[in-house]
Length: 368
View 1 (cartoon, rainbow, N blue to C red):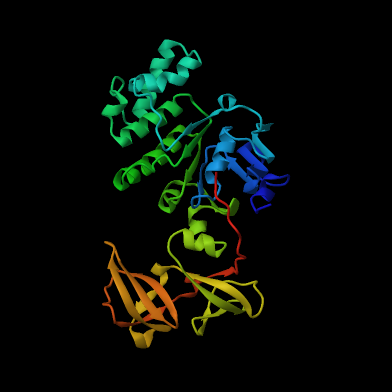
View 2: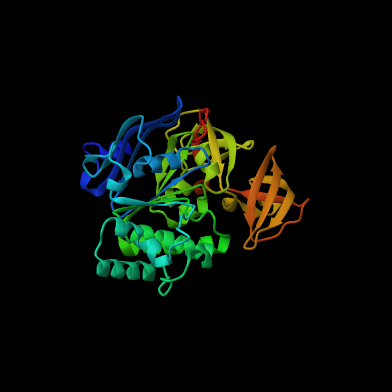
């Protein structure tokens, strides 16, 4: 079990705080295991994001929670009820997909009302609910519009309104912003988080976009090859990655081989550095992570390390440089421009050196 599972078993957080729990969940497709002993809980009113590359198992996990798939092994609980065999329409949740799946022959209002009509909600209540969710997603007055007259962002808002109008306790979102352009996607990230706070319901969000995960989430679950790699707040995931994969996948990192000489002292890049990590032992091989923005550029004679700038790219708020130093190609971010060919010094503070155990290589499987 991963570290989170120990918190939701007896002696951990009260079960009343957990709306969904997965215990040792595995999923096989045609004899291939795509999910491997997933242990996870989701708190009530939490915005939790499943993050990882294509094939990591995040969408399969969401489909298991939604009821579109059943686990091969393990159990999924909604409060204190095992829902492994409960069909999707009987679960108190709704799903928003990347493809909006709006009915082209129905107006916006009729698209939103579709689920309510199936549930035989009274007409007056239906009208009130539709007006409320349209206001929530910023589409008041669009009731009589047709889907093909809407922009991609507006269509996505209608899909979200259609899910919210059913008043689910949990909203599942499977890469819902993937089809939008960058500016619209960034705007919708803020709006989705504001909606979640206003509604006070649980959002489970799937994405491969690190910025989305860090921007919106209360909790991020990083996945790879059907396994959970790390669970934590966005700050924890970014600042204290548990392994080289998380460090490399979340943001940009310099990952270099090191040797933990003793507590608070690590050797890499041909010299020893003071750090803030301990408990690894003596002369233990480790991975050392240094974020590009944490390297301070100084005059060559003042640097802990010296290097030559081999490439320079302007990224708007800063320059990104590749610097060859001590046989390693460092990535640096700086607001100052240093031309290609320049010699620079580099300083790294103890708080900006992150030490991790060497990661054992794993064979990944593709997600179905």
